[in-house]
Every structure is written in structure tokens, then in C-alpha cells.
Image 1 (tube, rainbow, N blue to C red):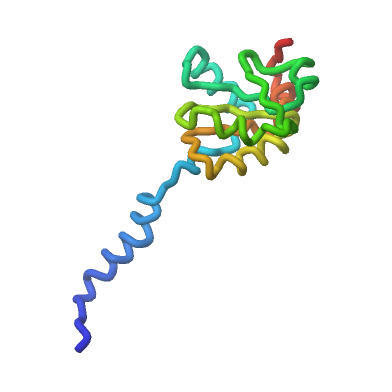
Image 2 (tube, rainbow, N blue to C red):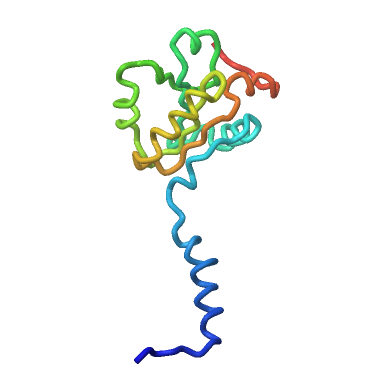
Length: 139
């Protein structure tokens, strides 16, 4: 015998499945996002001085030396130990990553999605977008 349920419960079931279930399934990957240079600048202003905030420049040492965002730490994307060094980073800190055009940083965002990082911002358009937005670099 098949048990039937009153029809008034189906809208409620639908509500939970369609609307509430996705909200309860938000993963840490929802905090691994690409942002604009303007948003990156705002985050930097807000987080400067916070020991749990790290700016990662993933360009080459030559690119970094030519000019980088103030307080950025170099982590060369092309280094043979790049992924190993990523794995050693504190996953609970907040990171802003950037490169020249957001190609390498976009790939890095994909690499770290399964590494357990809590919050990583990828600066879209990279240093090119940063400079085009009128922000400065340091040497």
C-alpha cells in the first residue's frame, strides 16, 4: 500500500528543496572569487595591518622587482615548488592574489579550490587592470 500525503505539504517540500537546500550547501569555494581592481583596492585599504591578510604576487621575480602592490609577497607561479609552497600557506588567512593579467592568478584560484583555503580573492585584470584603474605600484 502506498501512503499518500496531503497536497498542502508538497509546496513546503518544494520550498525546502529548491530554496533552502542550496543555501545550506554553501561551500568555502564561495569565498574563492575573482574581483575587480577597484574591489581589490577597497579590500587592501580595509585589511591593511591585519596579520591574517596576505597579498600574493604570483608573477616572476623580474616582474615583481619592476613594481608590485605595496606589502605584496612574491610567490613565483613558474617556480617548480609553486604548488608545494601554496600547500604550506595558512588556509585560514585571507589572501588577495594577482599576476600581470589575471591568467596565472585565475589558474591559481582553480588550483587552490580543493586545498581548504577559506577566503581568496583573485584580482581580475591583474596589474594591468590595477594600473589602468589609477592605482600605484611600489619598487
